[in-house]
Image (cartoon, rainbow, N blue to C red; front, side):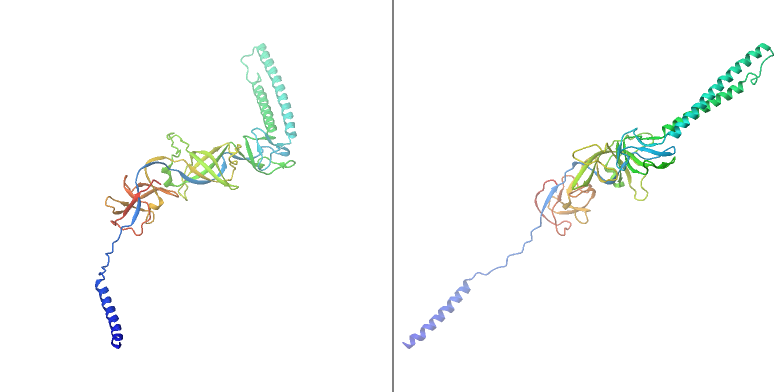
Length: 389
């Protein structure tokens, strides 16, 4: 019995050792799997030319086409002003804006009219005396008379005095009309410096007024933008007739963006010496006309301008994500899925797109997705041809 108790543990221990050895012997040997590197996955676009109308953007301040100082040509006391003669007031052409006391000038008209009547009387008397002198000389029959005898110098003097009196009368009447300062155009008052009861002198500045028929905006155009738009450049022989490209002016007022449609009518006569820019002048007709969708295009308003440009059909547009290394290069994938780094010339860039004039051939595949550390000749996997931006 005692021998049996000793044998059982020995048998169990032996069986465990044999089982462990069997498990170890039967376990397959694990070989490490080889490490494989997959080329990065990229999306590409096919370079295809498209018709693009390039636009030029600029900014400027609204100004009237015509603006003058209201200045009297005679002196006197102001006795009346137009009801709208105040800063911001509107007036019509030929309306009397300021009236100067005309009594002194009425008196001058009366005096000069009397002088004309007197000069005309003296001329008639002299003509009668000259005719009498001519008859008397013929009656005497004493040869050819002199001009003095026939009173010709006297007649010339009287005619000259009549002409001078008539000129004085015309001047007096002209000064009388100048007592009423009339508006030369439909316009608006910018500033006024006089009111009823004030004495003004000839040449004094009474107000600053401007026309409301057309508003103008000077728009600076950089030299590298001139090729994008057909500006009405002027030549001495009259060639290159102005094309008047359209321009959209806009301003953000009262939480809304307001727009006005105008056109480029001319360019200024010289480039700016400091900035090298050329100023184009945009005009908007009837800027103060009522419109439900926009406020009046007021003088002094700062506006943004979008000028209609030329249409180009040879440009390739790409998304901004296609640019690498400071926006001067793109990545092109060839038929063997190898990457090539191409220098490009960006003709125009906006928020989402860039337009290329060279560097990429039509039909080539351009990487449009991000690629970390691109290397010339590296392999990539193409996900799919992306859609046009």
